[in-house]
Length: 317
Image (cartoon, rainbow, N blue to C red; front, side, top):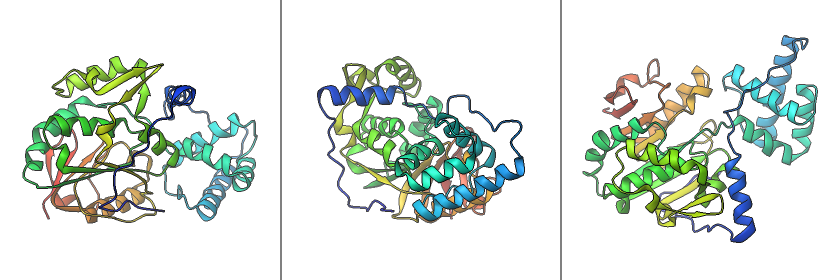
């Protein structure tokens, strides 16, 4: 899969006008994978057979499409598969496998199900406040700042970081590489249109995160959506990248991967930590999600905590 290059220009995709724009807003408003209650297999479904079918399905996805979900946490993954099985009116995992191997459109739907996309502007405001207070002073010492936002989903947190950097006077010498396994959510991120109904919640998040302006200055209301200032993506490169199978593509000052690895098993978490360690420069900063940790990873001793509560670490060797 293509990885972003250090000198890639920021994309210039502009939202489509009129009805197409409104339809995209409606899509975003309804996009909340991971939040709904997920079903499970019928009680009569043989568990050993279910596991065998799921293993074969994941192997088929990997060998046919190149997406490797074989080391994802099994319990969460199987519930997401059953959600798709029910939505398609199917009865078995094998039935789903047959369709996704022969219908690329089905694979696109399954990929949306398996790549969890729960996000928000300034999600976990205390994290952004800690980032302002403890990471920004370090970034001021660099002539140029490279930030990798791994697993960026639909882009709300990328825009949040861009706003923070602008308010701290660092945006013009920063480049944010925003990556995700899923090209569909990357397309939505490039658009920079988020549900208008979320703006009140996002405004409160922004203020609690130490925001220094009026949040409404950053977007224009249109139909049911909020179109964010396109200059916020001038220094952002959106690109597809698979944490499971793709390697490092640059050296970074900051890597943010928050609430992604909670869906990986321990072995895969270690492999991703290895990737991040090899992608961070000395004294680079790694930010994880609230339920994630460096504990028991092979590079635990290579970091010091800048903020234990908000899971912000600095590589010291």
